[in-house]
Image (tube, rainbow, N blue to C red; front, top):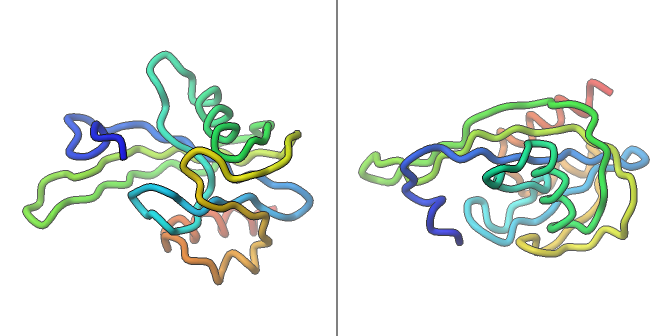
Length: 143
């Protein structure tokens, strides 16, 4: 766990990618907190000097070993966690992109414990953050 993300002095920016390939979507099982062990779209923190699209492409390559073509932003939200005393424990502004698979043999790397391609129907039964699942499924049903 990267210490600067916990009890931060400012919000961080995170990016994620809902990657589609032949009607299936790439999900990872998170290897780190927050939400360790839960399924989500691949992504991570934007680094200084990096554009949002550069960051999401890098994070997807690091976690999944695939290249993507970014189509659009489909969601922006806050993820704010407070501790028992009410102090801000974690604060990310998350920007999620819809993307198409381009190339690469998908395999879990970096902070992804597992990964798999799933349909929207299969996603309903996975252990995911409920807010994230709702946002993802809303985007998928627009297609």
